[in-house]
Image 1 (spheres, rainbow, N blue to C red):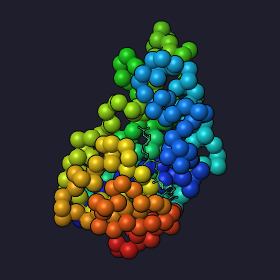
Image 2 (cartoon, rainbow, N blue to C red):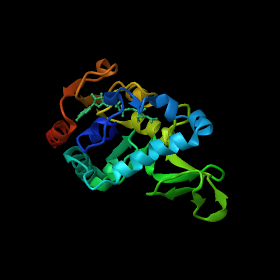
Image 3 (cartoon, rainbow, N blue to C red):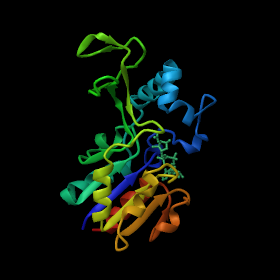
Image 4 (cartoon, rainbow, N blue to C red):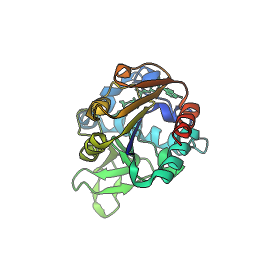
Length: 230
Ligand code: OAD
């Protein structure tokens, strides 16, 4: 049985990372779409760096840890190996920290930086700003950006996601409001024969596409559902 899982901010909410829509998509009075775009970065790089620097610091706070939903997915992957692919919209590293191995981080990763000129990607735990020096080239200053996907940019790993969706016998969407595309369309890329399960606190615009919608907290419902498959 081939299994594809898609996660969103809801799976990390109980780990202490606020979701996007629960905060009304606002950050310090800015609309998210005004901060998380290539245009915003060109117009006001300090603001955009500040936004992601805060998030990067928050993610590394000792109180932030994977929760039972992250651990249950990692354990499930361990038991199903090649049959399982985890696609996440989250830019946190909680799936990795819980032990998941095969992860497509379709919206990028907060603890990575990317060179605007070469595309080279580096592990990154510090702040980024306009005077950050490229680790491999001291002459290149202020040319690193967060390795995240902004509105208007192409998500990462779409070919692999398409293929996994087309082959999936079971698709599980967890903690996503299903309003940001193309992630919200992945359920439509699965075959009619694929069993589709949604686990979320609330109904979403995509709920009618699923065979079963499980309403509740990810930390409770994900371990329970995965155990029911054994
Ligand atoms: P959202 O913040 O839009 O949605 C989170 C969903 O999780 C909501 O439907 C909540 O009801 C649900 N939820 C909250 N707490 C939960 C819990 N404990 N257990 C289960 N469900 C819970 O987050 P995403 O759908 O991930 O994109 O947002 C998608 C994308 O929009 C993000 O990746 C980001 C954002 O703009 C980019 O930055 C490109």
